[in-house]
Length: 356
Image (tube, rainbow, N blue to C red):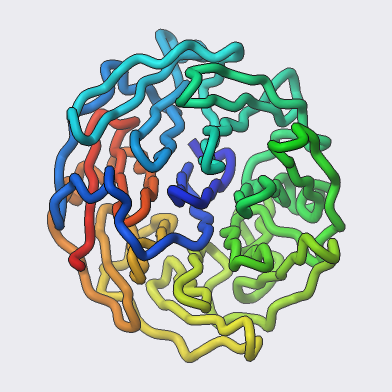
């Protein structure tokens, strides 16, 4: 699954369908996440581990919804995992079915975005009332490579699509309180392989614009920042990272980005400056880099290999076997203080809690 990039905040989530985007994560461990021991823990798989299922951490439970059913027919059902009971419970079926969706936690509801009759639509689920609500369609097509970021007030969708298409610079924002979408200003650049980061004030988009042969429009990865208050953009200075594939997250007041050539750079928004590159302690292969921010660290995933960054990089062992994680699709989902790693559509589900 490589349809988009998703991130959410407050039980901060980052869901990856081959790409990553991130919102800032808290440094505390919520009470539910604290039930997981430090290090790696394997969790029981959902009763039905479906390809394309969206995972959302609500602060108290992990929801797995949708995905491919029999003969990859769209499904509307899902399950919720209680970390205290270490068990899954079926949740009510949604009004709409989807084979692939992106999930976000708003602090009150889980929102799932997916194609609906040729438009980008979706639905919201309230775990307290166990009720669903179909949200209005966005003024955008459901293009591949779009960026989706929860800001704490709005869900911003931007970019994606073909290199010469109109969608690469277009976006819209969904307000769940009003249940409405608004168009946002066109970006100064277009991206269709990128990360989206909410800094607390700006949405930063960073990555590249590729053509049908995966050739980038720019020599290095580039970025821009959007201010929702003024509905305006500013461009970032060029990085020194590869335009072929990158992943970027927000970490303690700066952006940490790294590329598939295994180099990382920090970007300081106040100084509008990139630091010198650092090397990651991983082996190169043809993979897309993924990462999330958790407890003042970057958790990086690359071809089944993992590393942690807190100012310097360290290789991380344990968890799923490197061979298994390399051969199958992997999804990262962040709860406050932990990372859930789902291999092969939650057939192999792990949680990692960094040391205090």
